[in-house]
Length: 153
Image (cartoon, rainbow, N blue to C red; front, side):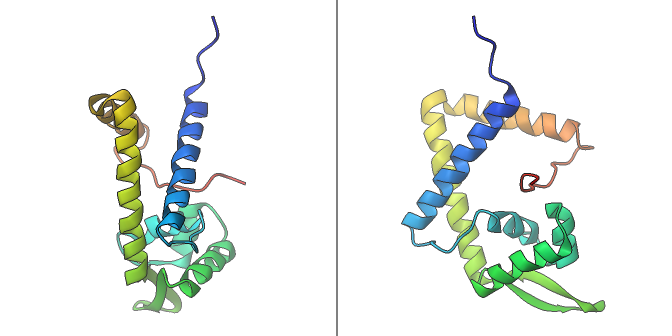
């Protein structure tokens, strides 16, 4: 009998599967200028504008790397910069309408992908999986879900 595949490896395979399919389907729908790293910034600013320093901390990267990524996203029209009301040196990064449309497309594709998994394992089991993962993650992070971050390089 073979040993079971470690959960960490299964999670990594599942994540890769979802992200690869997400970007294939985004491209099929006309979103050809979206890089995988954009998703981490979009998630960071989804709930409201943030500074490049805050984005860098959430991504676990340098401010320079975060600023370069944000600049590429600004040039693509997904985010914009505004003056920070409390710090004249800082800029706030927020979603544009195009960024909001991209997030809506991503949410729809994720629903489709989850529906495909539900067709294989059953929607009740998929919801149990979601509930169990949420419970385990909250238990190890003081009741909160941790931020989504890119893999360490």
